[in-house]
Image 1: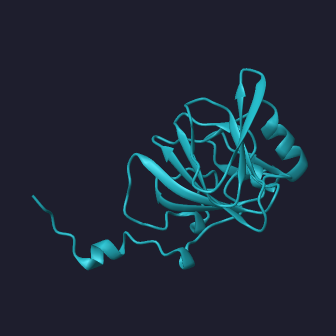
Image 2 (image 1 turned 30 degrees about the vertical axis):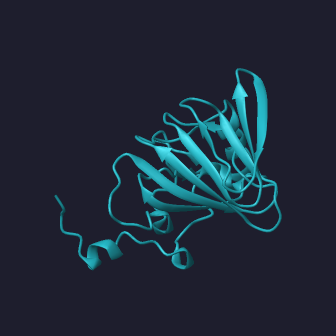
Length: 179
């Protein structure tokens, strides 16, 4: 049985790369050294800490109730702070090589991924990554639902607030240190 899928409906399901909206202020860690990146929410659940930035609304407006597809873009040496989610997270480099890191207890491990290699991190695993290629790199991200906010390593949020003035509210949304 087939439903009705007119061109107008399907047009709302298309996000053209050339017109994607994104923001360099999606998370508390984006103001920290080695964590500068642009986040593009393509479809699905909101997974950013900056919920008031209209550039972080999903580029495909139709709802996706149980996942988020996004893309990150950054320069060499940039990436994320160590963080974990209450869901799985999948990464696939689209442009350039990326090094992914994770903690096994107190032990740090890493692996380098080339374009179209993939990795999935389980629930609760602290993970982070750095772009190690040339020019701007792009990384596809898929996060399961319910995404919730990220958890950072103990002490990281306090260090971020002290160095940059950025902190998170109790609900995990981005706030300034002055508020």
